[in-house]
Length: 121
Image (tube, rainbow, N blue to C red; front, side):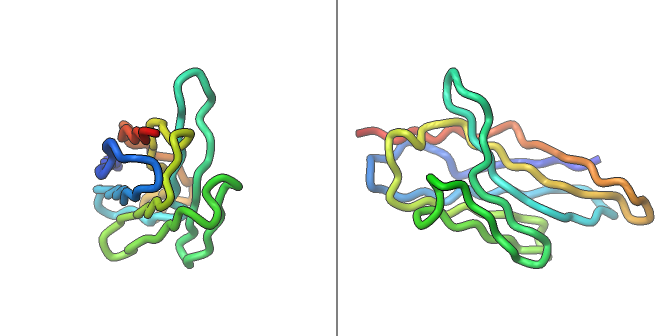
């Protein structure tokens, strides 16, 4: 089984920055795409940014130019650097890890519990 744990959320003023981290634990797993999603109150969960095992990235329109996703494959960790934060970025941010066990062909999605990001105006 894979355990996914996020950290780094908090309260920040508009224009400020935060760096989220997410680490996955689980032996004998191969990690494919890693990503960040968010869910604001009353809204559906939406993609923020994803990164492939080879380093290819993809961002939502609202994140492009302000957020940067990166990963450390040796540590099974993904990061989200968030700059120029806005009040509308307020949400619970969830980490997603797509992985498969060594020797198996099927990938599964593993989610963290989420970390709250609040941006005050």
